[in-house]
Length: 130
Image (cartoon, rainbow, N blue to C red; front, side, top):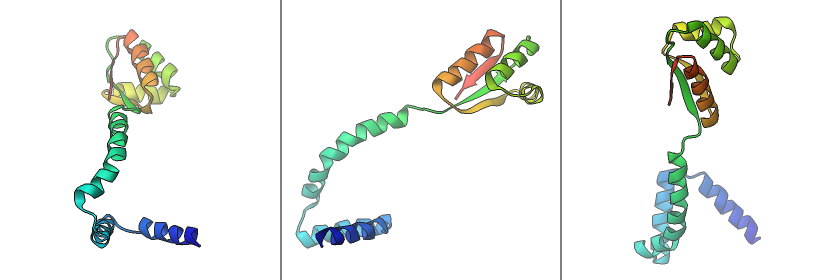
């Protein structure tokens, strides 16, 4: 019986907007005589402990945009390497080179982005990772 009531309360809370949730917290504080600092102190330690990893994760980027800034003087070699690292067809790779600066790969991992940059820079292209 108690589990059913708890489940109903959880479902009700899930349906609340942020404003309604803030009003609920205020009403609960008033109803049970909880002061602001006491109420916050009970939940502050877990929130603070969870905040540091969340901030670190937000700072650590996992997806990168690789763009070709310039081709250099070895256009054919750049075209060959571009096709090799991206598996693009001749026309698609040529379009990227002709329209530089242009995007080579979106949502690439750090390792993949570095690999593409290294390969293309070996043959004289200028590549940027964002």
